[in-house]
Length: 168
Image (spheres, rainbow, N blue to C red):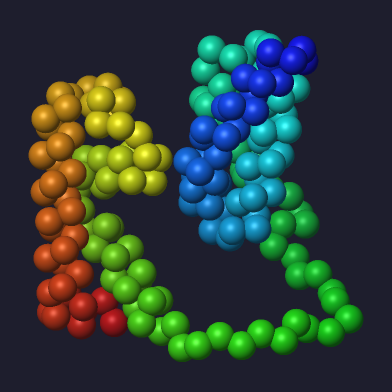
């Protein structure tokens, strides 16, 4: 990799790391595992930078998906690691946060697939409306409308006491 390619790669990492770490977190469910996954993907990307410079983010995403699937299939995945003594941790009561997260997840499951897809692409993948419209094969106005209706429906579901009781 020459100096110009190193600079391009560093610029790419600087510009897209926030988005990519969110995707890695969604894939792994753990901040530390997400950081490891992204680092592995970026290392593999750096080695092929000259061939993928036209669309590097797609390549990084593909590497992350494949790496995570490999980790899930690995016989070592999920095994506990022995340590001399457990770390001492104290945390406050986070029950309300867990309840909120579970309620939101349940509300998301009740949305129609198209509305769920719009929310995932807009907020998990952090894609612009124009890109979401292209992926979903619709207009930008439709994406805006679907997003608005989906978020409004989530607000209704999460604040509805009957639905909250049903989820418990």
